[in-house]
Length: 181
Image (tube, rainbow, N blue to C red; front, side, top):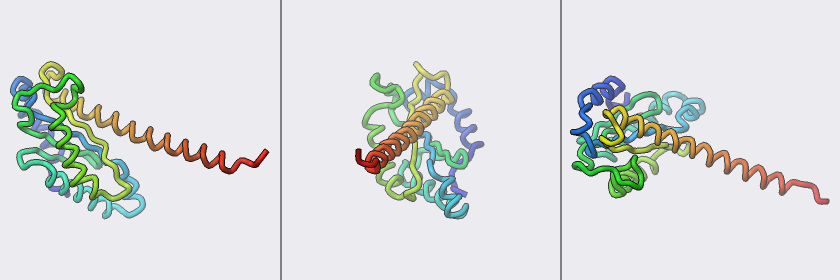
């Protein structure tokens, strides 16, 4: 449906790129989760949800280089393997999940320009990136796990931020509607 690689392609890519020494600092894994796809399916129908997936896939194709391998893993998850990102550069000591600020900032800017601004308002993207690192990863699967874990953390942070906002709003509303003493 999306025209991107599927779970089988994902597994094949990992098997073909299992040499951690060759991949060290050279492959970045971007893990993306769409928050709100179920809401779109439930309120606007599955055709609208399917079209959203197709649109996101198109935006990802436009946002990443041709040499990067884009995959639609499941209903709301996408993975992109970015090749030749560091030419042997190790992740910085500041944040072991990212290669360097330039790569991460460039990725964030591309996603902001191409993807985030074109999404339905009900949809949010939780994402993170991990760069293959021989000091942390025994194989590319470990790099994928770090990207997935980072994405899960960001997804939880987004949920927490919404909950905190709703709690503040409810407190504000309850204070405004208290009877005078």
